[in-house]
Picture 1 (cartoon, rainbow, N blue to C red):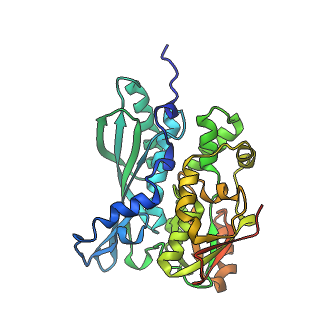
Picture 2: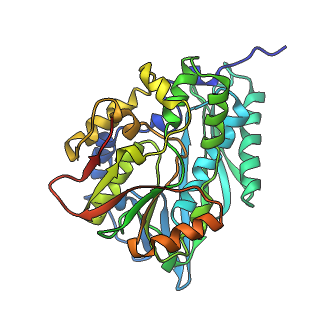
Picture 3: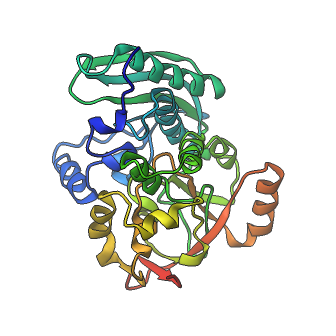
Length: 348
């Protein structure tokens, strides 16, 4: 009988929590400034910190490409494959696009973990790809010391329907489509403190594909969009505000949380990278009280979509989301630029 393996014990971070720190990433990308070449057809590159690159090929067609991979966020290899695939596919949806195929990226310590478990990871990914109607067409694998998995996903979008994270307008309302707390629950799992019901919720939310993004791409009242991942809701709201030249107000008490998250926070169970995020964003943020920092900076893996929606279209937008049975939470608004980028209202 094959020994049970806990995948989360083979890496320090997990899921999108293993991203490079925001300040370090900025320094890495700054090195490109002196050699960057301008391509007229490249509609979205890394200059806007968006979810995927977009390249225009004709007047009515643009190609989206993204790559996303990380270390295990759960111990079950099949669920890990589902979460990693959902996270990568959701980047295409976050641009308002339609995924068309994917390639796998696999790093596996074959001498320490059975290849049969890697096969389970692949099976989980194929299930997600099949659910959104795309093939897992190929990929690349290496033998290395850490288990890592993800996808490169290609999609399409009409150039007029691209949703960037830098096009919010003053007065826009801020919505999110999933509750927060995935990083906290993943940490509770890694430390073997999680209850079975909360582990099930972690798997459910982290593997849920943000397919609503393709529909949101066709809605002109949605001015900007991104997904909430490793930098937490605070970091991604800050990116939207900075990219759009605005400030944002977030209503702390309106932020939705996954059931059980608060009890783990009360036990000081949350990712170490929560502090990393806070250190990167604290100087641009005001109004954070006590442990609310954890909820704001908790690194999400395949978190919800963060939307900037025209305030006059609020009733129309909410009615459409209700018709589609899409969960949404109104959590704030964008304002003209103030002295601080993100103001937290209420809390604790």
